[in-house]
Image 1 (cartoon, rainbow, N blue to C red):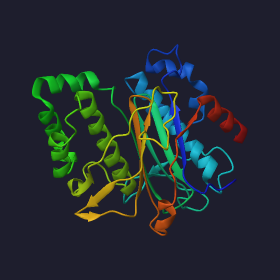
Image 2: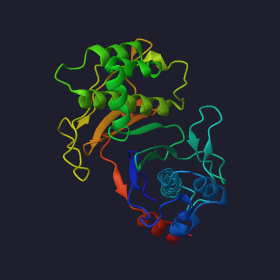
Image 3: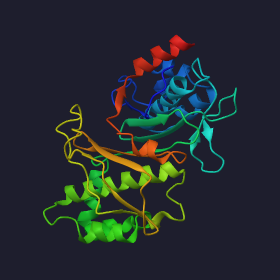
Length: 304
């Protein structure tokens, strides 16, 4: 195994998976091969989803975590069959190596609108967070709420998960030239940034310090022309510089990147290496690599 010098970043796009399946239970036959790579418990969990799209996302998440462990864990020569679990302190998803009883791979997963993203690094202490958002998935509902109550009311609906200054910025300080779609893009950019940072810490949206975290005068990356066009790292389609404050103090030990993925998706990544802060700060977080279901199945079968 070649040890990566920075985190691996992968995406699975489930939107075209199993075109003949129209209901979740159809996956029992249509997705029998990928389901066979998981435990009976996981298969049962996946097949309980009411919506087929959610079941596919869950399947992809389970497969991607297994793939990452098999690729990065030093003592995992085969397709791992032990279940990922939760850290008892932070509740972050972890995998316990049955041989060493350690967690040799740090990873984090996010899913939205058919895509599942994962960031991982072979380390017991690295802190990683990722969040993917889609500005169009709830667009009709968002526009209906804004038409009914106005932009300020829309922002107020979510004020419990933003800092007071972020709420003010969204309501009063976005460029005057922005139409509603532009404002929504800034809203979802901030949502992704905060989620990635919070997931890095292992906390959730109920963290007691949530409103003491602040991204000052953030900006959303410009969209790419299409989903198949990667974001240009040298353009405004990727944003790397952020003024992050926690309890008023500037945060300087977390590396954050926000990039566009087509016209609607954005993906935020946050990384930190507490034992050697310079390591994470030196990583240039590039684009996420798209994997296919066939690649993962072939890899799993080669390791069984």
